Structures are given as structure tokens and as C-alpha cells.
Length: 268
Ligand SMILES: [Mg+2]
Image (cartoon, rainbow, N blue to C red; front, side, top):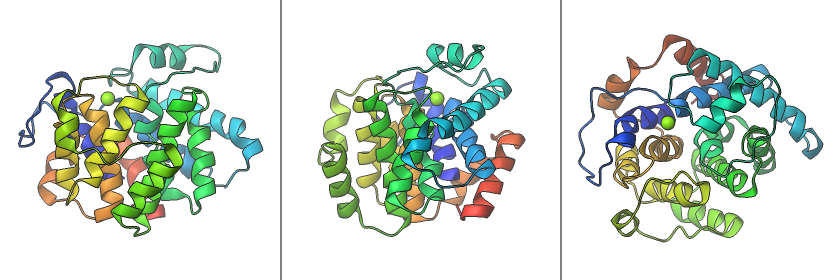
């Protein structure tokens, strides 16, 4: 789980100080953001209720995820949440939002770790998007990320992961990071920002290079790195110590406690 969180932390500085430099330095001002808070909320929803669901339970399960999003938002409302999400989280009713942004994909990594079948990953990813990103583009991106984590953790090779995702989600994952980077901009639309995050992982050769690829695209850096880092940890199964040393002290204790509980249960 820390792979996603560290990506968010290291990318946070570059969300507002965009860089195209692969060799960027880790910045002292880096901090966890909404990506971390909501990833932890997903962990909590799974720890509270790890049961599999059927397609007829997606909406009810969605309510459990949504409850955790609202709860964790209330702990860290200043963590960089978008306006639309904040309004949703503060409203008295559980209204259904139809955002097409990458918010559902940025927090979905734990689902790829926790569930044991592709079918269950699809359903849980959909449920986790139901109240905030009830939009086919956003749901598809969330499912793609969760599936990538699932395949990576189960030892599938990158070519398999690439072609599986291309076939299922109709993304073009053959583009090179250097080519994407040239005119990449900050745009949090799921269909624009999620495929490059997956490519950042596919083109990496270790955890650190995945998040460097993601951040140096020069876009929504924390989210790109959160997604790429989450998949990369599942695949490489190790994170360099200098990265954990840099990030660990920046994670709020109550968030860390949930991540450690999740890690103890699911091994990541
Ligand atoms: Mg963020």
C-alpha cells in the first residue's frame, strides 16, 4: 500500500511546480494529499467489510465506500480535495456525482490487493466509484488501475498486463513516456491522465523509475505517481529504503495505522 502513498507524497510538490525532468529532486515541502486520504478510506472500507459482492450489491457497497470517503475527508479537509468532491463530502445527502476525473482511479489501488478474482475487482472498483464518479470513463479508469495491481501482484509480466488492459479498456499503452511528455499538460480527466500513469509503470525498471516517469510527465503529478507507484509496488514488491525514509515521517499517524492494518491483513 505504501507504494501508492509514497508516489502521492513525492509527486505532491510537483503538482503545483510542474517538471519535465526525470532526475527531479525530492522536495522537503512534499506532503500527503487527497490521493492518500482517500486511498486510506478505501483500505478502511475493505477492512470493515471484506466480503465479495454480486452485481446487484454494487450500489449498497458503494454507500460503504462513500461513507468512508466522507469520514476521511472530515479528518483532512485541507489535503487538496477538488471543489466538486468537497461539496459532495460536506452535503447532508449522499448525492451521486458523475465526475469524469481521475479521482476514482487515484484511490483504487487497495482493491487490487484485497480481492481474489478479476470479477470481484471489477465489481468493487465500480462500487468504489458509484457515488462520486458515476461516469463510464472514470469507472473504466478505476477498474483498469485495480486490475493492473491485481495482475502485477499475481506475477503476470508487463506484456501480459499491457495487452490485457489494451484489450479490455481500449487504451493505447504502446506510446512511449518521452513522446507523451512532450506536450503533456495538467488535465485530470480520467481518460487523459490514467493511461500515462499505467505506461509510467510499464516503462519502468524498478519502483523509483515508475514514479519518476509519472511525475516527469509534468501533469497531475501526485495522482500520476500514486497510480504508477501503486502498480509498481505490486509488481516489484520492494521500495528503496531512501524513499520510505523520506516519506514515512510525512504520513499522519491515524492514516498510517489503517495502512499497517491493511498491510498486515493483505501482505501489502
Ligand atoms: Mg492530490
